[in-house]
Image (cartoon, rainbow, N blue to C red; front, top):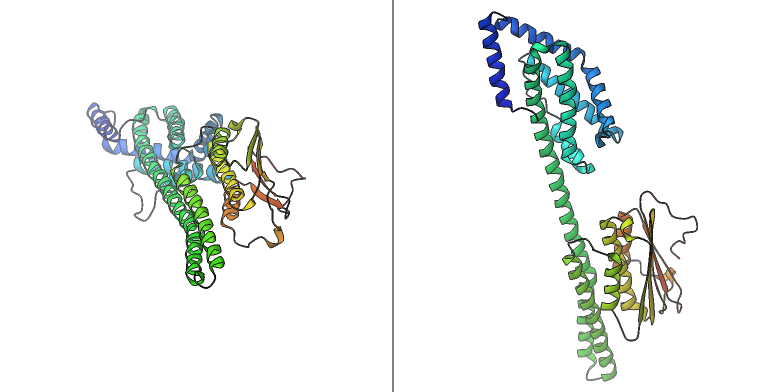
Length: 385
């Protein structure tokens, strides 16, 4: 474990005083010796960085997984070595030179690399440099190690600060996007339903004396709009409450079909494969997409049967929601459909797709495909009919 910065300063001072008293080295001689060590480190910098990279590859460090991460990691190592050299020479950095550690921490945070990997890499660099200095300058090795410890401690701290900032920024953006999504749902689904009911009641008031039958039709339309709006509001509230990952996608879908049960409609579920081939966040999104497809069946299809089928394989997840309802002509589908748009956006966020096929009088089928571990859709995957 790296020593503290304060102990480094105390030790360096005691070494300098004791050597001066014993006659082994005066202050100018010690300064010259440290300058020689600094020059050697500067000369060997490329070789040290090369050894550092070799050791990181040996432990399969994720800091070398792509070229950008590798470049940042090795450039950071060179920066740290430069700081050690400057410290040995008692030189200070220019005031306008910025340390890259915070930026690197933020980049790693955005890439999902845990700070523990930065700490592990710091330990690797510490070992590489300490061994090298111990070979060519054993008398000054402790002084070098103390300076190296100070520099690495500062770099790891700054990288952790950058990582934390990146994570907080992602959380903030996720919250903003979630508020926007809820706002869209409230505007497109709740607002539309309430306005439709209000307009129908206005027409009822207009027709109730001169055309009672038309007035009654408007009341029924208002009732239907409010019923649909009630279901939409319930869906939005449920989505906001679902903060924990699903324990089981299959159980959640069976519960959904039971909750949405109707004596005049049969709901069936076929589930094949091991759902745990899909990560929890994928299962959550798949549930929300299927739930939206079922909501559309309940609201618009006038179906007597609906079948949900989910097939999970190691490289892909496929799901279909098929009903025997009234269907529609895809060529005349409304250009703006909040439900369909939401399903497609969720699928696209998983690098997947949602397609819909339908025929008036012959029902509708919603197909969802999501890649797992780099899978690709089959060549005969039907398009959006």
